[in-house]
Amino acid sequence: MTDLLRIDDEFTHEQQLIRDTVRAFVDDQVAPHISEWFESGVFPSRELAPALGELGLLGMHLEGYGCAGLDATSYGIACRELEAGDSGLRSFVSVQGSLAMFPIWKYGSEEQKTTWLPRLASGEAIGCFGLTEPDQGSDPGAMRTYAKQEASGDWVLNGAKMWITNGSVADVAVVWAGTEGGIRGFVVPTDTPGFSAVEMHRKLSLRASVTSSLYLDDVRLPADAVLPHVSGLKGPLSCLTEARFGILWGVTGAARSCLSAAIDYAKTRVQFDRPIGAFQLTQEKLAWMAVATEQAGLTALHLGRLKDTGRLTPQQVSFGKLANVRAALDIARQARTILGANGITLEYPVIRHMNNLESVLTYEGTQEIHLLTLGRALTGLDAFR
Ligand code: TGC
Ligand code: FAD
Image (cartoon, rainbow, N blue to C red; front, top):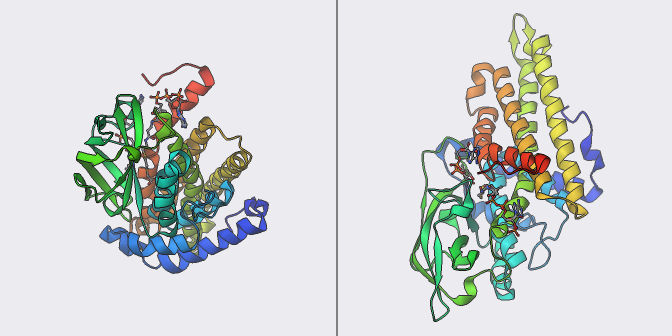
């Protein structure tokens, strides 16, 4: 038993059904293979995308255009169950729904929406989000990728993006670039001449996830490739707020998986003639892990309720991303100690979650960026620069 506070009893019947459906999908389709995918550094995007689409999980909190149109808490619950499987699986869904589909849905033209959203929702097409560059990560306002508009109206994009989830398997990239009038978003079909993507290897974290560099070399796009309804840094940052919401829920799934593995192991591993779970030091670890898991779950539920009633602020999302990722990482590390030497093998999920969470701590705003965001909210003083 890990759900000491019975948080899930607060879910509606429909939300409980979503939880059970996604959990069954992860148990059947992902759990039997995930350690193998992680070890060999693959993520079967083309096989999983249609299955995720069929379940309505791609862009599930968006309305219309083939999207499921569910509430934000349901989206969070789905992220939790996906990340109990692996952060790479949740990442795929976060990027597709919150970073590729959301900007098109929120800021796109009708034609951009009808062209891309139904295909992305069904999993027939895959999307990615290009913000980070080789020389800028935390400070996206300093991006060098540039889009020049010619007299004909065409845009010509040049630059490079790095660390892009789904990049080399994507059919469409939402690329953010500087223009004469400030930062704009572009909907770039990945078969456009001059666009290329190269998968990054040798990662020891999020191995079951495709991460790529994007190169834009005189990529010529028609005038209507720009997202018409947003300009400035708030465009990409508002997409990050959507995706960070999924993360603050998702990591509670990774935490739960680590806690369950540690409890199971502690009840069966015998040392000094007793199960190690009967030692007070082990019980203290498990009790703190359970407290932290439940606290993270309460934070996620509260923020879900705020989002569903239109009251959630970006600062509150920073609070949740900061607190819940930190908690999940601490829980994974503590679980690792309970499993002893077995804790470092892929026979158990713990080291995989632990390594994945190192990326989750960094992407979508590092721990320091979220600390500074809360510091600014508390003091009114900007300590970023
Ligand atoms: P700042 O002056 O604070 O803001 C510029 C404009 O943006 C607005 N804004 C936001 N809007 C919505 N949501 C947010 N979270 C927002 N934060 C700021 C702000 O109101 C302002 O609007 P306006 O109308 O006044 O122009 O900008 P700054 O340059 O000081 O930067 C602030 C900072 C450092 C917090 C921001 O740059 C930041 O968040 N940096 C972190 C970058 C980041 O998280 N990158 C993630 C890349 S994508 C990714 O990691 C995907 S992982 C994939 C996966 O899930 O697998
Ligand atoms: P930097 O910004 O160089 O930071 C390095 C260190 O300096 C960090 O500890 C940081 O907190 C600290 N630091 C920076 N500024 C300050 C400051 N003002 N005060 C105090 N400390 C500071 N990006 C995308 O655009 N799309 C994606 O799909 C995507 N997917 C990713 C997938 C993976 C697996 C990973 C690892 C990253 C991904 N990213 C993606 C990139 C990610 O968003 C960046 O790595 C992240 O924003 C941090 O940027 P950086 O790595 O360049 O670190």
